[in-house]
Image 1: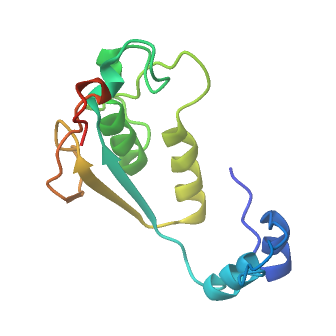
Image 2 (image 1 turned 90 degrees about the horizontal axis):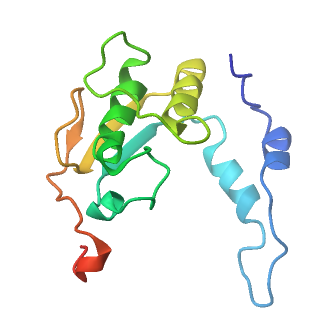
Length: 149
């Protein structure tokens, strides 16, 4: 179980690293202003998903052990974020060569903090098998094509 996040401005401020203002910088208190603006408001988690054929290049990404795994990683992440662990997901989380899926960590925080979740399909090869917002975007081509977007 994830510990509750702090709600006091001083505790939140201590979690945000703020850099000293640069000469001519009119935003010297950006972190403080951000905290003041959003204090007392509940967050929303919008997971915007897309795919690029660049991910099919062997060894280019850790978001799945193989290019084949990477074709469904975003779909698996969306399904896991929305449904949590299921005995027979349509798109299981791919095996990773290192670490744990960010979807696993995000799901724990979303559940513990009761954060509303919105899944947005901005350009996936298939439609997610869960409720989502479809933006009718396209899959990006490989950067090697010279015409990725």
